[in-house]
Length: 524
Figure 1: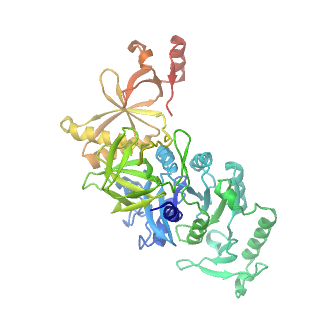
Figure 2: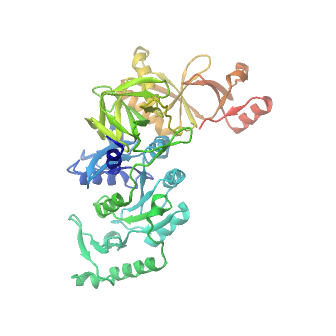
Figure 3: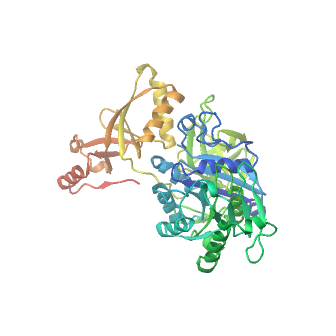
């Protein structure tokens, strides 16, 4: 493709993440978006464990058993003339690192909020990452079919807690058992709620009165909503596309994903105002434009065993510029090796199709035999390209891990190697004995690791808790093994760099007092 053709194709891409606190309903919204795209005939739910009708985006067995998302999943489909790339992220705080890396690969975010609970801790953390990157945010106030908080309080909390201006695109008419519908400010209509049936639309005249619906006009709840909307028109924020694009104003939609009310109205408006692929920054601070002629992209996720029958390993790549073509040769920046991309897929959670061509904004999967690491840049052309580094958390919890069956060392080592490369946990070895130590941000990561080792690698493991530790790296030239003690355990990371695991802040201060010339660093 020439630059003009690339620009045309790029403009049809919409690549976004869905973020929320656990149980706010983001995976259920994802399912309905797949329904609109014709990908599924019936939306699953993360709560459907008894029926077996699991959420399509929760493809991993442990997710289906526990009713949670523990890994980011990628889904692609066409809708309304656009190619949609959805990244459904884990809501649980223990998997923040996976979510943060995913946010580096999107152009906008959909923030799902439980209308009964409002802003919750994980929502706030994820919002701050979006704000830091200037990612446009679209807000969906979910679970309108249940009794919740006053809508004005929810919008006020959104603005005061998150520090962002809000523009309600619609407004509830009732809530829970009294839910009548939503006043659609953007389309100047009322969307009536019909339990179990498709929504009915009622047009409004210039005075916000229903046209040809006397029953709605006389409804007290509608009159209350009409008064609220007039107040928003007079005293609320003005709709501003420029502020949406910079992440300074969030369009707010009310609805209920579980009963598929208001979701399509939200999605149609989202597609109109969500950005197409934007330039990506390199380590040197340069910007790579999507319509640049040379291909470039970066690996933001690695996943093993998406198809357990084939024991495969997939590197997820966000295309940043140019055009991918099947069989093309690319350069891997970290190793400066040339690789041929001949076996490439696009995704629908755990199902895939071979892809022959893709452009900026698309997410493609490369079958990987161990060439790639999270954060790798691939590119074509003579000019080297390295995109900015992805975030990496310093672990806080540690366990010693060993194989229960010493006869299965091969599968034990293979499982650890692959799961560590995914970024699910971080691997360390004791400095002298080379015993394995795993580090993680939260306890649930260890539980998922143990489950997957048993179910995907047929390797049961022993895990001995070491508790909370403070990890600090030390320059090898300054290291003396005698510095180690029971209160500051000396280990190596997977790149053979030495670090201490301090028992607590007191132990670290004692070490600094004893060795004032030694520099300790926290790698984030």
